[in-house]
Image 1 (tube, rainbow, N blue to C red):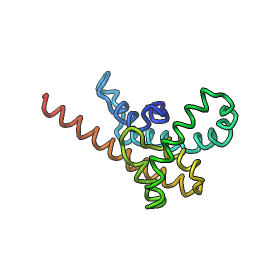
Image 2 (image 1 turned 90 degrees about the vertical axis):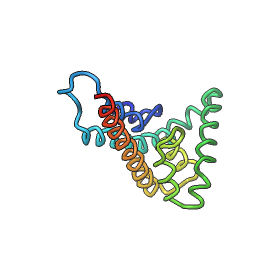
Image 3 (image 1 turned 135 degrees about the vertical axis):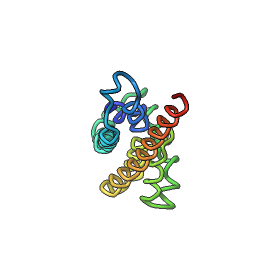
Image 4 (image 1 turned 45 degrees about the vertical axis):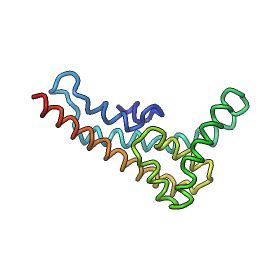
Amino acid sequence: MFLWSISPLGEAKVGIPYGLAPYGDPEQKMNIYLVFGICFIANILVFPLMMFFLERINKYLMQWRFYRKIAIKLALRAKYGSKEKIKKYGYFGLIFFVGLPIPGTGVYVGTMATYILNLDRQKAFWANAVGIFFSSVIVWGGTILGKDLVQHLFS
């Protein structure tokens, strides 16, 4: 669940349901609060790791055409997907953008927007963290309620 939560393929939106999944021995189920905490922290770690990548490694990799083509496409998506919200609502727009638990939003795109729009790093970190918290709470609560509903319907 930690790896899913730090991965660009799912973030905590996938890590939380994975951590709460009813597999294996019922006695070995993870504590629901521990699942939330691990996934939330893993997802927050993305911001500093991604900023390091963008500031240091990205510049080196841009010399390769294949990488540059993909990076520019992702950068434009991050810029135009979040620019209006951030321009209109400031850091609250970034919170909202990162906090939506849908594909294409999240801390990876929020970090790219921070880098591309040259936002204050500390404020952007906290906006991303708050957005991650809201997204994680929505997914966590939805997963728990969904599991309880399924258990109630099929028991």
